Image 1 (cartoon, rainbow, N blue to C red):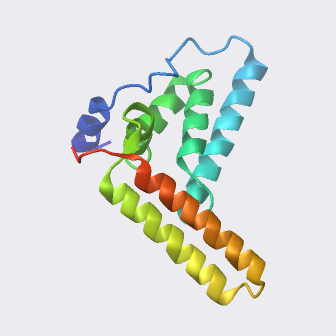
Image 2 (image 1 turned 90 degrees about the horizontal axis):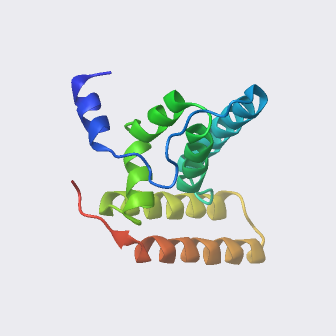
Length: 149
């Protein structure tokens, strides 16, 4: 890790609802939580690139799993330069920065537009995607805007 990354990581507090605890004493449960957290991180990463799949909720779920099973994995997720700040902002501040909102809304509509133009012919599916995209956009716009730090 670079010094800059360590400095940024040290500024992010732990997520409040998932306090680090002593990992579960049952090995099977601990491994199941680690596996679940890993799957949730994978789905969250897919959600970054797929327009209708949210990512933050999966990262929050992964943080919950890792917080109860692996302090190292929890620390990696919550201090990660790509996910950590978004997790902190969404969970602690109940919002997102303007660049995060712009990127999310832009990638959502770009993905919907490409899907509708190249892959869909059914009018009802097109309308359903437009309604979903409009609802997600409304949610993102209504989220509290956090100033850049």
